[in-house]
Image 1 (cartoon, rainbow, N blue to C red):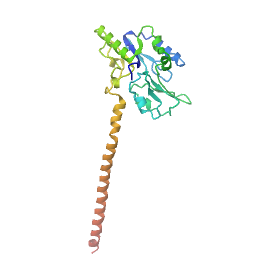
Image 2 (cartoon, helix red, strand yellow):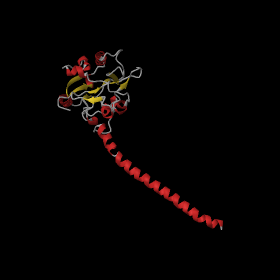
Image 3 (tube, one colour):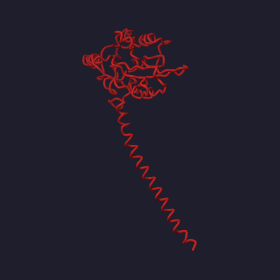
Image 4 (cartoon, rainbow, N blue to C red):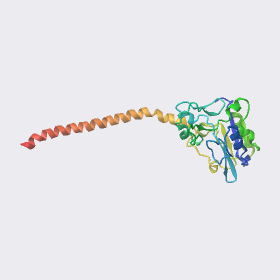
Length: 253
């Protein structure tokens, strides 16, 4: 991604749980109903209460998204502008993206006769036209900020440094699983707010590629071992037949 990759910074200390972001997201995507408590097929943004804090959930738009890496038809792609976009015209309904996403973001329209996978697209068309994501525009407290990925990382670090003892010294999304285009800063430890702790900093596609690279070797070794066992088994059968044939005349006499 380039330095102009767009991103969103979410400051949990400023979120008041007003749900304006969720409502604006639904309006922007013509989704029915009121804001929902969790991400759903018709809710790309959800605000979850966590004790005295509120945490906005949405697609994190990974720098190297696992959902895109497993899609067999190229129906999900990371764009130069930062958003991970879904193309329903290519989707075959395999739902591999739902399994691959470590953040459980993609949802499926189970109740529709012609279902699609749905997820946040960071209001990509609006952004391409020079605007901001609807959720950011609607936030009344400045809890969400939109800009370039590089600038928002600098802003997040600045807030942490200038407010010692307030923020946790961590920008969630900066490095997790290769990094994302949605960042969080908080005054409460992220694990206490329901954030997952990834097993590694490198992207999941890198980990899976390393595993898949070993498949030919494993198959070759496994094949050799099985071939050897087969030869030994057949050899034992042949020896047993010969010995039985040699014993037979002696037993008759």
